[in-house]
Amino acid sequence: MTTQQIRHKNKSIAALLAALGGGIGLHRFYLAGKHDKWAWLHAASLPVSLLVYGCFRDNQPFFSFAPLILSVLVGFLACLVIGTTPDDKWDAKYNPQSTRQTQTGWPIAMILVLTLAIGAGALIAVLARTMDLLLTGGLYG
Image (cartoon, rainbow, N blue to C red):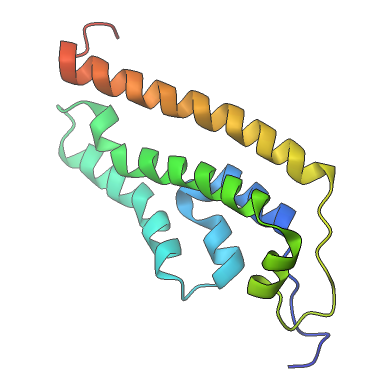
């Protein structure tokens, strides 16, 4: 491959994909391509959740969508890991043959702040709903 054909993996784009589409593995497909088994595991969480929900409609939907919920939370965590990776380590791992160097600026900081706020809120909501369902049988909602 020539240097013109080598794709430079942008850290800000990878973090944004992890924050917005991490639940279905968009960031993994961007970084590793279609041969990444973890990307397919993320992508499978949506159809598996829909299948479980379709087969067990009388059960609590929250538990039916647990694979997708877990995958989304892992996507938020992946965004934080991607965003806090130093630029030189990022280039060594994802852009070893690229002539460009990664220089992240304020967009990654904004992505990380929003992801941390939304991800922490989502984690607290998942824990609260789980405890409500397990301990009170869904008495509070």
